[in-house]
Length: 336
Image 1 (cartoon, one colour):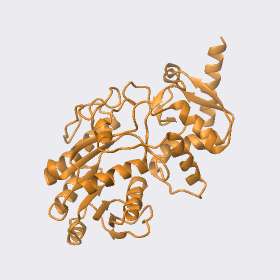
Image 2 (cartoon, helix red, strand yellow; image 1 turned 90 degrees about the vertical axis):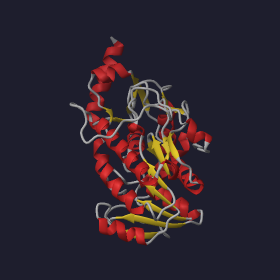
Image 3 (cartoon, helix red, strand yellow; image 1 turned 135 degrees about the horizontal axis):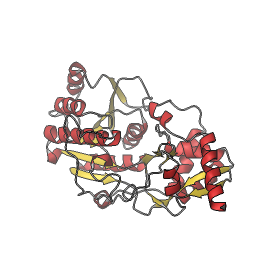
Image 4 (tube, one colour; image 1 turned 180 degrees about the vertical axis):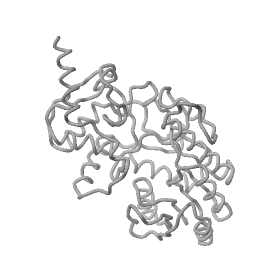
């Protein structure tokens, strides 16, 4: 298969390229060449997705059996890319997000949950997460217009983790546990979570590309796949550092103004955050490895040397001073 990956050097794009090469496919990547690193064996094409000239040149290098778009962030960007490749690709897969669902993250989700509609501007007071979801919905619409429902697949993953994770959610927890001491653990140890390993997403995406699957589906580990307690236990096992886990109730953290998702990565105390039913993907062959394996492999990757900086990594983590203050307040309340 002649496979074109729009992206291909960061995280999921990298995993896709490496696995596709292992399967014996001819792999092309299209990037600006300003970040990340090309996988050994790919045919790297340099260009800018906002340049019609570069996109026209990319199209002339076809035909491609399939395109996997991992880097389309805005509807106009995806519109121009999909339109340029429409006659030179048999299948177009767009990696979207669960943020396109109107109920995310407050309501449980299925493949048939309502999806946002694209518009140039959102309602007054729209949050950044809602804007992101609205724009991603616009990207999905652009793909469907260009390729039609029968030649396109929309993947809507939840939280993706694993080696080479540029956002750094699992790396933050691993590094925090490696520091030792008393660790602020959010909620309860049996609180279910369902992040998905990047390599499992890549495997499913390549299987789908080879089979030219069409439509739309969510991607997440099974509901109940793991718990936050499992995550922090895996961090201790991977690092070899035992810590004291101080489980602090959601309401207390909210009352102290702890920022969800960022100060304590993966902590978002809404009913729908970790209630994503990816039934359609499971029926099509999605298999998810144990969370402990993902955590251990991520720690092993972190030991290989400095990682590439990414702008989103700066968003994460509670400071040691603030963590200590919240812990002290909780211990004092519990003792009183």
